[in-house]
Image (tube, rainbow, N blue to C red; front, side, top):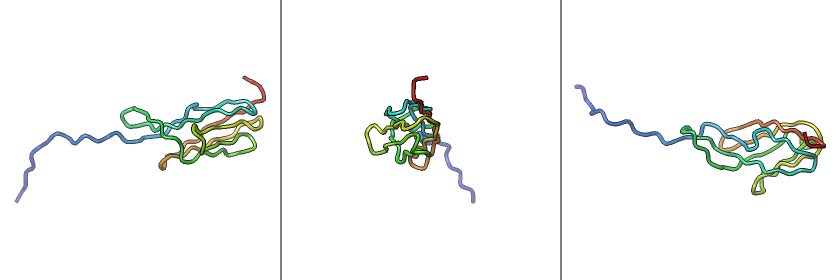
Length: 105
């Protein structure tokens, strides 16, 4: 016995998160400067929504430090050099290059 089901309209799929993005995308700051780091969820329909990071950590805290508990979350230049900022939110990860200089570029 075969069952034939009527064809119905497709069930719409709600937008889902495809990646996370930070602003700024590649922070450049001076020694002693603190800047906000904002994390956004990017959805399948192209929209974005501020999410904040669940984890915000620099690879070398001698170069820059991150404060994931402040609002907005921040990044502070400590010493001239480059490092990487690890950003995590709901299983998504992003590695963001960070440059710290003694003077402006």
